[in-house]
Amino acid sequence: MSRAFVAFATVAICSPASAQEPAAAPSAPSSRLLKPGNIDLRAMMDSDAAPPIASIDLGAGADVGLLHAGPGTIALGGEFQFGFCTIPCLVLNALTGLQWGVRYFMPFGRLAYHFDPRMSGFEKLDVYGFSQVGLVLVSSGVSSADGKVSLTGTDTSLAIGLGAGARVFFGDTLFLGGEGRFRYARGKQKFEGTFGNITITDEQASWNLTGLNLVVFIGARI
Image (spheres, rainbow, N blue to C red):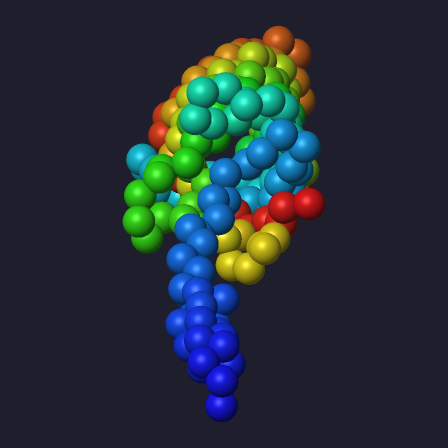
């Protein structure tokens, strides 16, 4: 065997090309931050925090990522809610024998800022704060089974709110979430109808939906 062949074999064995490639570093978990162009759709339910379950709201909403700003994303959104009186009306029904009811419809627009917590273990979270403004359309009524009492009241008023929330993702699109909101909404209803032998045409009564609300929702990102 020639010296040239031995030298060639030695170089081939020791060559870096024959060395094992180093293992690639694991990639960092992807963020669930809402990005420009993302759309989050959600179905939600909320209730008053104090007094608890005085009313329940059901609704649906959407948020659209608009543009990057600092470490987060500015988003615009909207939602529509339908609410109704619960425990207070049930108590009045039991005490008076009359049928009491309060319903309200609330369309809202909102501006939100979503940001990445950038903390280990929080990669599946989308955290955000928001402000919202909209209308409250209130309809109230009290009636009796014999028809001697029949009063209805309506009003439309401005509502504003502030809040913060988070979404936890399961997979690429589905999420569960919650929000804490402070809402300011109040006004006066104009009542009309009959109460026994009395006809009422312009009686006013105040209503107030101001307070802290707790919201839970389920949704999907598209």
